Amino acid sequence: MPLTPHSNVLLVEDDLVFQNTFVRVFDLMAGDWKIHAFQQGASALQVLAKPDCQFHLALIDIGLPDISGIDVIAAVRQRFAELPILVTTAFTSEETFLSAIRAGANGYLLKGDSDLSMCHSIELVLQGQYPVSPALARHLFRLAGGPNLKQTPNDLNLSKRELELLQFIAKGCSYASCADVMNIALSTVQTHIRNMYRKLEVSNQRQAITKAQSAGLLKL
Image (cartoon, rainbow, N blue to C red; front, side):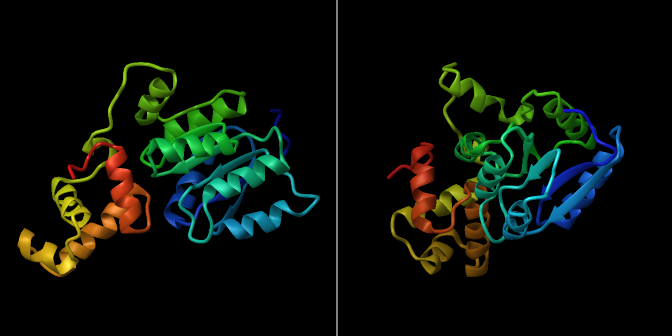
């Protein structure tokens, strides 16, 4: 895509640390880039509704505080049929990956990638290619019908303690009972629960149990 004197970037990212990361990344790139940053998806959608808005690239996080980044990706794609859209997220699940691609994303980057790696990925997507962080390559092999790579606890980043706790919860144990059996404080149980929800990208026990079962991590 040819660059104008000022190339506009739509950045939808609620974490100010990562907003600053992308400022550094675009400082490494050729051209004059203007970043239009939004911490909430709804604010970005309001701008997209304006008939005179123009962007040359969109960087969209999945885990936004108000609405799903998947919905923002779909709205951007509906508004701009050819605009390069890159996902920038900490979510590594195959389900999220597929949802983003189906919504219209052209690439999928993880926030742990280096500035130079992200810079290279942005350059690739501007050239019409489809960059994906190396850590997500297993999803592409699975989709392509490669060897059946079964998910393991490491794929979902659950610790042994978190898996043990999830096993007890799946059997109907209360948080207090789990704390007693595992010989840990109730507050520690609650911390493990929050971490599990974040890693599994779920919001309640039922969803966590279902997702863990689908990955073959629970023995019921």
